Length: 377
Ligand code: GLY
Image (tube, rainbow, N blue to C red; front, top):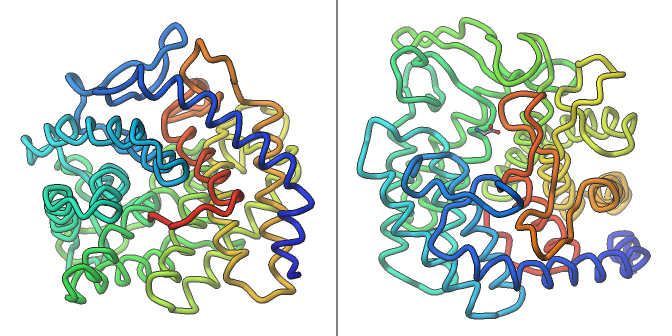
């Protein structure tokens, strides 16, 4: 038996009992949140962005969660809830000016999974149109994907995009046309050149001159300062580069994923495997973003599956420690309340609350530890 299987077996009781708690809770939470695009909870119950912010970057995670539950349980109820989100998400496509680089988060794990699991042609079209939209954000001068639509943010390229480009890898495979994948690889390579620092961490935002292509340097993003190490940004880089390796087989992407993973593990081991909001914040500051740890754990598990036998334990052990710490300290299993993972921070360290993307990656990490497949990104 290899080290991967041995570590899973040693933690089997924890993994099985936690997955059972997820199934018990989602079987109650899912049907009461059909026809909604949840973001956070209010008085314990999910709110709904479908009417107010259909273009919100988090709107794919609830259907994504439903597809994870459907793929693992084959319960049709989850499929119906997931499908109910697609017409609501489509409202975002009504206003071109509002679309952004996070369309991968929104459509790759909603319509994209629907198509891959069911062959639904309408779902395929939705995902392909959004792949085309993401590809259209690529700038030949800079070699990277522009993040935002507004002129005031025209220069910004952000590390989060690494987790959106799997939509492009999928589109190339689906169409047998390398254009989408070549754009994704150009983006990934340019981010290595400019966003990565010598300790393995990544800047969140760099400005580029969109006409000359010159990289003008970092600006403050969601981290605590220009030179900070926003924790979720590191997690997007870990999982994003691991996925770029999986989709292209290019060794440099795996090397980068391991580098930033090693940085993340060194940092998170100092705080009991729950991620701070920023790895360069004051070490005594209690601000956390649990979503970063959950996202990183998903990346670690994929890295552990790929690397040679004598490297696997580093990544799988860190993933299991993270999931155990989140489960012990930050999960709500009440069936009266909708969210599981607490203390996610979207834009500011002082705004910790349950947010749907934290929940999604926590469930995906357990889905992977249980051995469920496929990988949907
Ligand atoms: N836009 C993705 C994030 O806030 O992490």
